[in-house]
Image 1: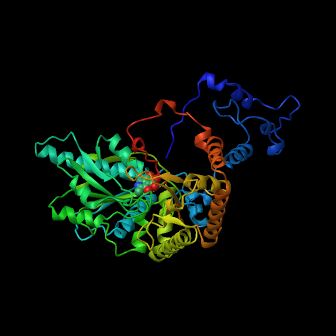
Image 2 (image 1 turned 90 degrees about the vertical axis):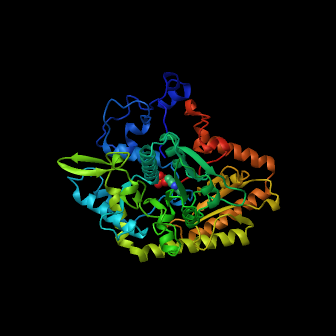
Amino acid sequence: MVHLSTIKTDAEQSSSIGELLRLSLADENTPNDSYTSSVYGSRYALEALPTNEMPEEEMPKDIAYRLIRDDLSLDGNPMLNLASFVTTYMEDEAERLMVEGLSKNFIDYEEYPQSAEIQNRCVNMIGKLFHAPTDDESNHSIGTSTVGSSEAIMLATLAMKKKWSNERKAAGKPFDKPNLVMNAAVQVCWEKAARYFDVEERYVYCTADRYVIDPAEAVDLVDENTIGICAILGTTYTGEYEDVKAINDLLVEKGLDTPIHVDAASGGFVAPFVKPELEWDFRLPRVVSINVSGHKYGLVYPGVGWIVWRSPEYLPKELVFNINYLGADQASFTLNFSKGASQVIGQYYQLIRLGKRGYTKIMTNLTTIADYFSMILEKRLGFIVMSKGNGDGLPLVAFRLDPARDRHYDEFAIAHHLRERGWIIPAYTMAPHSERLKLMRIVIREDFTKPRCDILLLDIKHAVDALDAMEPKDIEKHAELVQRTVTNHGRRRNRNHHYKGETHSLAKHGKSQAIC
Ligand SMILES: Cc1ncc(COP(=O)(O)O)c(C=O)c1O
């Protein structure tokens, strides 16, 4: 997610600490030969990095590279970031192809026809993986690449809304109050889509022991203004698959033709390989569109998602632009125009390099590791595991402390302790109406092998032992200190004070968004 940045005011720039940090330690004796001195022997090592104003002069490229690289070394280590679904490992050959594609603008189909052809191949492969119908010559399934699942979900919402409003207009009925039915545990992009495109969000709430949508409740919320139901294949909180088939069957039973969009951001590249018999995709007649993130279990670095529609019937013409780009007509449905071609190329590499067997091996390994991790957490370390094992959900482990054990610390304290070892493992409060349960979540990704899993299990044990031995007041003090001085959030308080305390998101119900 891109964060809103504020431009510093004059007063902020001239604050005493700000002024001090901008001071140069170089003086007239500091050599100024950028070309012969080493990076750390140059005057740049004594100067502050420009932060607010573009510098007046150039700097040598090796120095710019090194200084920015050093600056970025304060970022977390992606391999230890078990908070994120997003791919942190690709083979060297994939990286090389992606670097070679960096200068290609993907939208420029005429100049880079082969990159466009590669997208077509990926859409075909992914569509078929989701059982897109292929038996009707005049009614092709269609799809496109996006920047991620969020853009795909925006496009899906627009398509559902437009189709619904066209039908209402044709029937002479009002079309000013569209609504979308979804679990309150949806990822924030659904809240954004509803708000940006003026659609009412109709929530099915989780309970203390149900973290997925209740199909009957969802279908009961449907009325003539419902543009669709969202079902999640692998919720962001616990990874559990929502029962798309039950929603589909209830709609069919009631004679409702409400479309289902499946948010398969993570599960779309897991379920087909680990649970091929699970019916959640275009095999179900009410499923009209599906999104998946190529950069999650699609195994590509961040910046690629996919969306597939069952047929053009579900993607109204008015939304598609035929762009005459450098003399050639191209149908386009995206929120953004230009983007790099590398991510689509990286996806194609993974699809043909691994094939179905390769993806199956990786996803099966991850599922086995998640089950092992859950077993040790539950049986040896006394945690309650909230995620589903055995491939019935994503390969992630969501867990919490057992309240029966009456500890004097919570999941956030454990997360803080693990952070000191470098592990980035988040603690959250669950979606609204689930009694503000706290939980921790570990996403098992391709590069998380058993040896690393064992190190983490030992570190969790050590964290719990240390916290058990600590006084409650010390734990509180320590947590407060970490929050204030170590976390980025704490260190950069009030950055966007204009937007603090907004009241439209689910955060107003106490929902913390899980990291994706
Ligand atoms: C279920 C679900 N939907 C949508 C998204 C947003 O996906 P992206 O980060 O690809 O935009 C996420 C991210 O984790 C997710 O878990």
